[in-house]
Length: 183
Image (cartoon, rainbow, N blue to C red; front, side, top):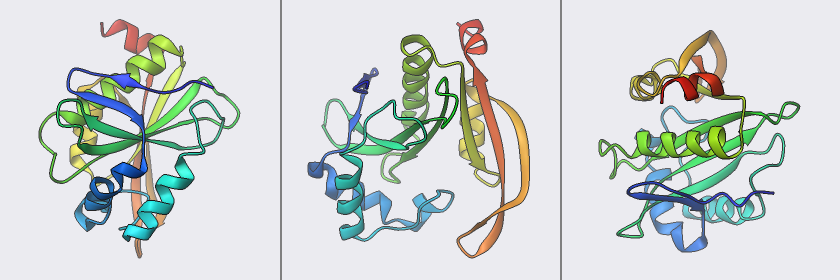
């Protein structure tokens, strides 16, 4: 089992802690932040339970999402969280997700986190392929994925019943060789 702790220029990606509860709840309870996410707004109790449950999980277990806090290195404030899951059957395939607090958006944090995670997965763990599923209406995330070299592989039309309506999703992916070629 790997302990995932990634340092980027401005951020520290590490396990969520109960001391992050207040910062975590601020954005996880905001409907604008959860709009395109696979989770809904959280009460403070749900947020606390989520952090406690997640604390028993560690990177490397096939099929299990593990959530990590994204901490501003200088202020020690939580600016968001991200998740990594290794495929159930092919553990050299990973799926990722990123959530940035509404108070911290448009500062380049999502791109910094994404590049940090990709560096870890491709260069340290030698993952073969990284996948991201994104809501077809989530233009900011789609632009982020394209800007870092992800390719759209699929368009799933009304494939998910989500927050009271049918939604469509795109699948984006990047291979290790594509990551290596962009350097």
